[in-house]
Length: 498
Image (cartoon, rainbow, N blue to C red; front, side):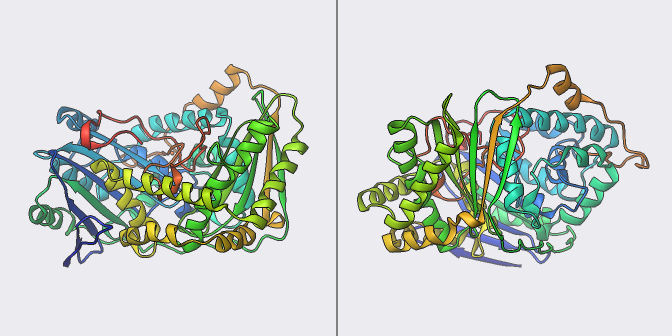
């Protein structure tokens, strides 16, 4: 095991603790408030799921609160509440994270809980069957969301081989058939110290914390290393789809496959997304909302990930506006951006917004812990990437932005999905689809989990560019399945809900 400290003008003073079993912890001592935030981040997400087990990562996240060998059912939330803290979790394509915010004199209980549930979750079959209904209801609620089906259809067109193809919450058919045995096998294969890291920020004693981490996590056995997913082959032409949804307005999503999180092009895409559609000064907002009054809202999302991600353009049409007119206008504005790039005054404004947002993410201990975790999990150089974020944004040139726009915004490699009003589902049918009870799966052994299944937008946006300038009403449909309800309230410097 090794310990090292790194201090720079752009980074907090991070002490890195590494154990022989592959576990890693990032420790940041920060005052003056007596609070501590901890985030345990697993390198396990929907990209790790095999055919037939989609949604198991998120479902397992639910079950991680249902009891361990050391903490009976309900005790994790009960003890958190009694200590006046908060806890929650989320799952996305690339990972799953569990976090606590507690007072400094009692936060170490979070370490005990996380060490216990890393390998000793009960995954009780009765709890599994009950929670499966919760997950299926969550899935049904997502289907009623006006943006999620559009987002998922676009992702499924962009990714046809890579596991980003399937939604984080999973396909209904897989969730209904998932067994407790499958979940336990998934848990045993993926949840271990070498597939996780811990971030602790707040009023801590670093030496004591490092020692406690060694005591609790050091004895835990390694699991299999993460497999490399199949890569997406080159797209040979534009892909299109039309959804008939039970909503009263028409919506559109353009999607382009892009690059990995933390690559230089990622930062350029943030600036391009802002200029294209993420403020009232953006190209699409000025033309589509203000000048021609074609849409009621428009937003652009740069969704880079550990493997090449996507950039999405989403909008909601005004009544009576023809889809062809809106699609033509968006294509014209994207081509104009490819020719003209980003105006100097707009570039300066966007860079100022990004800098402010990036620095605001250090405001609370939980925000800072999430920020460190997001970069540690998502980029090749981990949390140290933070050192280069603002300098990289500031070094981008107008010529470079034009080149990046031309490189990725290729309509021959785009996905275009329309969601148009269709037959409305009856409430009875929707409820029946969500609430059909599931018994423990056949063949499940007593004491094993029977079958389990993150959220709308991701917390601790991976870079500053994800918050600054977002249109007031623009919803991010998001990659994650809906979180479980947060326990407790975070106050002061402990951060808040995602």
